[in-house]
Length: 182
Image 1 (cartoon, helix red, strand yellow):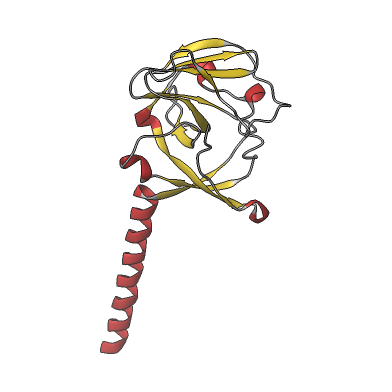
Image 2 (spheres, one colour):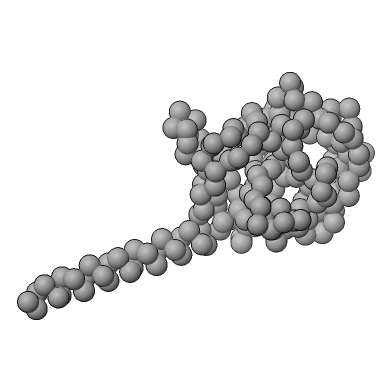
Protein backbone atom coordinates (compact mmCIF):
# COMPACT_ATOMS: atom_id res chain seq x y z
CA UNK A 1 0.00 0.00 0.00
CA UNK A 2 2.90 2.36 0.76
CA UNK A 3 4.25 1.89 -2.81
CA UNK A 4 0.83 2.74 -4.24
CA UNK A 5 0.65 6.08 -2.38
CA UNK A 6 4.26 6.80 -3.23
CA UNK A 7 3.48 6.24 -6.94
CA UNK A 8 0.40 8.47 -6.77
CA UNK A 9 2.40 11.21 -5.04
CA UNK A 10 5.10 10.98 -7.71
CA UNK A 11 2.51 11.29 -10.51
CA UNK A 12 0.98 14.35 -8.80
CA UNK A 13 4.42 15.96 -8.43
CA UNK A 14 5.34 15.36 -12.08
CA UNK A 15 1.97 16.71 -13.23
CA UNK A 16 2.35 19.83 -11.05
CA UNK A 17 5.88 20.51 -12.34
CA UNK A 18 4.70 20.05 -15.93
CA UNK A 19 1.79 22.48 -15.45
CA UNK A 20 4.03 25.10 -13.81
CA UNK A 21 6.62 24.75 -16.60
CA UNK A 22 3.99 25.11 -19.33
CA UNK A 23 2.44 28.10 -17.54
CA UNK A 24 5.79 29.89 -17.20
CA UNK A 25 6.83 29.21 -20.81
CA UNK A 26 3.41 30.24 -22.15
CA UNK A 27 3.31 33.40 -20.02
CA UNK A 28 6.85 34.71 -20.47
CA UNK A 29 8.63 33.04 -23.39
CA UNK A 30 6.43 31.93 -26.30
CA UNK A 31 2.74 32.21 -27.08
CA UNK A 32 0.60 30.72 -29.86
CA UNK A 33 -1.38 33.07 -32.10
CA UNK A 34 -4.03 32.27 -34.72
CA UNK A 35 -4.26 34.76 -37.61
CA UNK A 36 -7.79 35.99 -38.20
CA UNK A 37 -8.50 38.08 -41.28
CA UNK A 38 -6.67 39.14 -44.42
CA UNK A 39 -4.76 42.27 -43.32
CA UNK A 40 -1.37 40.52 -43.60
CA UNK A 41 -1.89 38.78 -46.96
CA UNK A 42 0.30 37.66 -48.74
CA UNK A 43 2.68 37.08 -45.78
CA UNK A 44 0.08 35.49 -43.48
CA UNK A 45 -3.38 34.15 -44.25
CA UNK A 46 -6.51 33.63 -42.22
CA UNK A 47 -6.04 30.48 -40.13
CA UNK A 48 -2.21 30.53 -39.98
CA UNK A 49 -0.97 29.31 -36.59
CA UNK A 50 2.07 31.24 -35.35
CA UNK A 51 4.45 31.17 -32.40
CA UNK A 52 5.12 34.57 -30.87
CA UNK A 53 8.43 35.25 -29.11
CA UNK A 54 7.68 37.25 -25.95
CA UNK A 55 11.28 37.34 -24.72
CA UNK A 56 13.27 39.16 -27.46
CA UNK A 57 11.89 42.65 -26.80
CA UNK A 58 12.92 42.42 -23.14
CA UNK A 59 16.54 42.60 -24.39
CA UNK A 60 16.32 44.82 -27.49
CA UNK A 61 14.00 47.28 -29.21
CA UNK A 62 11.76 46.31 -32.14
CA UNK A 63 13.21 46.83 -35.62
CA UNK A 64 11.70 48.07 -38.85
CA UNK A 65 10.15 45.27 -40.89
CA UNK A 66 9.50 42.91 -38.00
CA UNK A 67 6.01 41.48 -37.68
CA UNK A 68 4.52 41.86 -34.21
CA UNK A 69 1.42 40.81 -32.33
CA UNK A 70 0.01 43.49 -30.04
CA UNK A 71 -2.99 44.56 -28.03
CA UNK A 72 -5.10 47.03 -30.00
CA UNK A 73 -4.55 50.40 -28.22
CA UNK A 74 -8.26 51.29 -28.24
CA UNK A 75 -9.44 47.88 -26.90
CA UNK A 76 -6.76 45.86 -25.13
CA UNK A 77 -8.86 42.67 -25.25
CA UNK A 78 -8.32 42.57 -29.04
CA UNK A 79 -5.04 41.39 -30.58
CA UNK A 80 -3.67 42.47 -33.98
CA UNK A 81 -0.76 41.39 -36.16
CA UNK A 82 1.07 44.04 -38.22
CA UNK A 83 4.51 44.99 -39.56
CA UNK A 84 6.62 47.73 -37.96
CA UNK A 85 7.22 50.49 -40.50
CA UNK A 86 8.06 53.63 -38.51
CA UNK A 87 10.37 53.80 -35.49
CA UNK A 88 10.32 56.28 -32.58
CA UNK A 89 11.31 59.80 -33.64
CA UNK A 90 10.66 59.23 -37.36
CA UNK A 91 8.20 60.75 -39.76
CA UNK A 92 6.37 58.32 -42.09
CA UNK A 93 4.89 59.56 -45.35
CA UNK A 94 2.31 57.43 -47.16
CA UNK A 95 1.84 58.80 -50.67
CA UNK A 96 1.24 57.45 -54.18
CA UNK A 97 1.63 53.77 -53.23
CA UNK A 98 4.97 54.48 -51.56
CA UNK A 99 6.21 54.66 -47.95
CA UNK A 100 8.94 57.23 -47.27
CA UNK A 101 10.77 57.42 -43.94
CA UNK A 102 12.33 60.65 -42.63
CA UNK A 103 14.71 60.52 -39.66
CA UNK A 104 17.92 62.12 -38.34
CA UNK A 105 20.08 59.95 -40.61
CA UNK A 106 17.90 60.54 -43.70
CA UNK A 107 16.56 64.08 -43.58
CA UNK A 108 15.65 63.88 -47.28
CA UNK A 109 13.83 60.60 -46.63
CA UNK A 110 14.18 57.13 -48.09
CA UNK A 111 11.55 54.96 -49.73
CA UNK A 112 10.99 51.48 -48.35
CA UNK A 113 11.49 48.64 -50.80
CA UNK A 114 8.68 46.40 -49.60
CA UNK A 115 9.00 43.11 -51.45
CA UNK A 116 6.59 41.49 -49.00
CA UNK A 117 3.69 43.69 -50.21
CA UNK A 118 1.80 42.43 -53.24
CA UNK A 119 1.45 45.04 -55.99
CA UNK A 120 -2.15 43.91 -56.40
CA UNK A 121 -2.88 45.43 -52.97
CA UNK A 122 -2.31 49.17 -53.42
CA UNK A 123 -2.00 51.53 -50.48
CA UNK A 124 -5.27 53.22 -49.72
CA UNK A 125 -5.05 56.77 -48.42
CA UNK A 126 -2.15 59.09 -47.85
CA UNK A 127 -0.73 61.20 -45.09
CA UNK A 128 2.29 62.04 -43.00
CA UNK A 129 2.60 60.62 -39.51
CA UNK A 130 5.05 61.52 -36.75
CA UNK A 131 6.07 58.67 -34.45
CA UNK A 132 6.64 59.80 -30.84
CA UNK A 133 9.07 58.18 -28.40
CA UNK A 134 8.15 54.68 -27.20
CA UNK A 135 5.76 54.20 -30.14
CA UNK A 136 5.75 52.56 -33.57
CA UNK A 137 3.93 53.06 -36.86
CA UNK A 138 2.53 49.70 -38.01
CA UNK A 139 0.87 48.59 -41.24
CA UNK A 140 -0.67 45.39 -42.53
CA UNK A 141 0.93 43.90 -45.65
CA UNK A 142 -2.46 43.94 -47.39
CA UNK A 143 -2.58 47.74 -47.47
CA UNK A 144 -6.00 47.89 -49.15
CA UNK A 145 -7.72 45.95 -46.35
CA UNK A 146 -5.74 46.69 -43.20
CA UNK A 147 -6.98 48.57 -40.15
CA UNK A 148 -3.68 49.95 -38.86
CA UNK A 149 -1.74 53.07 -37.79
CA UNK A 150 -3.19 55.02 -40.71
CA UNK A 151 -6.60 54.66 -39.04
CA UNK A 152 -6.01 54.65 -35.28
CA UNK A 153 -2.54 56.17 -34.83
CA UNK A 154 0.75 54.90 -33.49
CA UNK A 155 1.30 51.76 -31.45
CA UNK A 156 2.65 52.30 -27.91
CA UNK A 157 5.63 50.00 -27.22
CA UNK A 158 4.06 48.58 -24.07
CA UNK A 159 1.13 47.17 -26.13
CA UNK A 160 3.46 44.87 -28.09
CA UNK A 161 3.03 41.26 -26.99
CA UNK A 162 5.84 39.80 -29.04
CA UNK A 163 7.67 39.11 -32.26
CA UNK A 164 6.35 36.64 -34.84
CA UNK A 165 9.02 33.97 -35.19
CA UNK A 166 7.50 30.79 -36.65
CA UNK A 167 4.49 29.74 -38.73
CA UNK A 168 3.51 26.21 -37.69
CA UNK A 169 0.28 25.80 -39.63
CA UNK A 170 -0.44 24.96 -42.34
CA UNK A 171 2.45 22.45 -42.39
CA UNK A 172 3.28 23.15 -46.06
CA UNK A 173 3.89 26.80 -45.08
CA UNK A 174 6.14 26.11 -42.08
CA UNK A 175 8.57 29.01 -41.89
CA UNK A 176 10.88 30.91 -39.55
CA UNK A 177 10.69 34.68 -39.97
CA UNK A 178 13.30 37.43 -39.83
CA UNK A 179 13.02 41.16 -40.45
CA UNK A 180 13.59 42.17 -44.06
CA UNK A 181 16.60 44.32 -44.85
CA UNK A 182 15.76 47.62 -46.53
